[in-house]
Image (cartoon, rainbow, N blue to C red; front, side, top):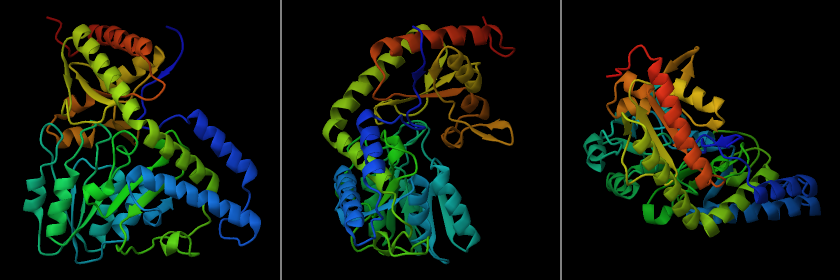
Length: 384
């Protein structure tokens, strides 16, 4: 099956056709600054506000509660740094994205206490562990909606109730969840919710932070009064338009697409488990994103598997981060109790809109071929 096939949608998604068309059209036809009062500016403003409404609709929010930013990292930083002050206590988890964990490190440097809660071995954060971590000065709790590596969906609604019972603000990094599962910020009871367009088949460089009406937020960028004074800078109207179109597609087609992709994901897992011995799933089997699987291959380096599959035309991810030229084991998998060697033996496969049955079957066969080859040449794998 010649060609190249993309199975790394949790890292980023390709631009969808309808999104690209809207993006290019806005670049060509909307030259105005959305803050200008002339016709060019007002046309840009109208398109910007339409996009804001579309993003709000995806989250079941009000348009005025949506702050357009540059992406998930800025949204998380704005939520944390714009809410917390020295003397506060913050609770987060050991499986968060660095866009949450690193701002928490910065807050510690500024005199904020941070408690990091570990998940269970299946990747789930227990609400009662959050409750036990509460202190009198707990002001902020941040728990991701779905993990980017394992896909495990967290009990956000329960944790939100615990946060509010303690008078704390609840933030959720929803970058991996929005567009893949239904997100209703009202039902979840959250105060702040981060999303990123490039996980939704829209361009990189645009995202949003939901800020519940009545929740105050200190701006972290200073300049003009854009975004109701919460985020200075001339708005990126073409990217916002594209984001809005992607959000609208997810509203209209998301449930059906998620069900389709879940069937493909299950088919892939079944074939890999049947073809390859010594494979285990990392994280829960049921309560996870429909497109995500994280598999551990006994006696095989995950990086080696990623490279071998890439040579065969399939893009997947090890879920590891590179630092100073050395591959570090996933902090998510380590937090779940895996050893460093087990974490390094893991591969994440994340499906998307363009994946179909034939290439899923071809990927499973390629995984089996790669696993057999890598084990034959492995100095540590037991061939008995």
